[in-house]
Amino acid sequence: MLKNKLAGLALLIMVSVSSNAQVLTYDTIKSAIIQSNPMLEMYANQAKSFDAMATGAKAWDAPQIGFGFFMTPYQTSYWKTQTQTVDGMNSTMPAMGNLMIQGKQMIPNPSKLRANQTYMQAMSSVELETQRAQANMLLADAKMNYYDIQIIDKKLQVLTEAEKTLQVMITMGEKNIAYNQGSLASIYKAKSQLALLKKDRSMLENERNQKVYMINTLMNRDKTISFTVDTTITIQQYETQIVDTSNIISNRSDLLAIDKNIRVTQLKQKAELYKSRPDFGIEYGHMFSFGGNPNLFTLMGMVTVPIAPWSSKMYKSNVTAANYQIKAMQNEKAAIINESTGKLYGLQNEIKSTKYQLELYETILLPAIKKTYDVSMIAYAQNTGELFETLDARMNLQMTQMQYYDILLELLTLQAEYEKQLQIY
Image (cartoon, rainbow, N blue to C red; front, top):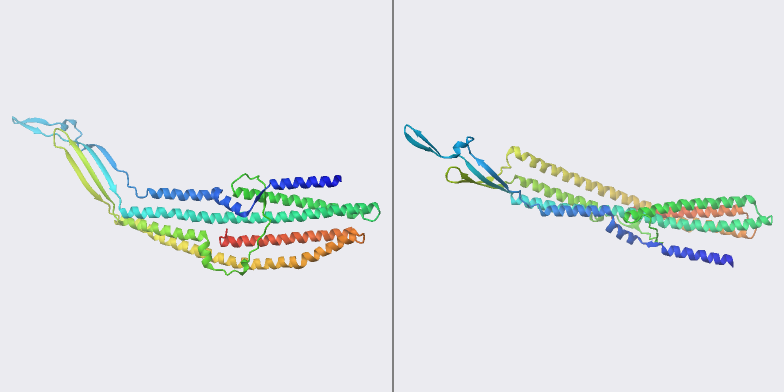
């Protein structure tokens, strides 16, 4: 009765602890990463910065205002009207010099401003596509860590079952020894295997904690928050899909980012070409003349001559460089498509092979080894079998179950990599 009460209390404690642990689905993790990951926020803010810069792309240069002397002699006596007597006749020398206020404004070519603004507006789209490409990388990492936790939990269940079985064997063996029907060496072997199971449990729990820290980091929250995962494992039929490059081109944000970068480079090239168009300017100056002379003014229009050989070299070379940059990006896009297509074919082959291995374990290996263990356990319980044989059967079953989950994890990892190549969140 006391044992039953203690067992019930332990079960109640386990249920209450597990109920307090947060259950996270992959969709919940995905939403949190997209909304809160600082790296993704960085790309969003960079896009906003380009949009803000585009709003001022059509601004003119600041006007220039000047104030000072204009055509004024150094000798200040000439600033006033002077009367001189020459051969008994008075002559008047007019004052010399002016005080000048001047204003100047350059008027940029409107086509230049429009081209520059369009170029700046397009730059934010590259950042947004790069953000989606980075999100694909982060979500693939989260997915793989999530699968790791799912498999680790299943392995821990295997260890829990093995520990219970070994404890039963040890109890039965100790009773048999009391009646001179067991081997002390077998008991020691069982206890050593139980200690190894505890060591394996510690390693798996440490590995699980590392995966939890990683997912919490991707979600940008407290790294020590514990959670449980959904036990449902979904196996996709990716090995039967047709590899279509059009899907890769239309789905992959890194490829779309290259397309938008090509467009940005073309717009930049257009803005460089428009540098061959002239800018205009106007200059006005008002002069307060000294000595009662009439006030004067200057009014001048100006135009730049960007087609001059010594000034056209820069924008012509930039236009040529942009052509090579566009070709380089097109080559990069083709290389990514080629590499991704090859990976998809390779992943399909690996998925097919891994599923075949799982099928062998599920239909042949696990049932056969399970039956071997069951028969050995029944024989030992009936005192017709040896503990050594039963321990070996238990170890073989545990090892085969662990191998099965290793292969299942490999399949899930291949699945995640396949989805990463096609940017399937």
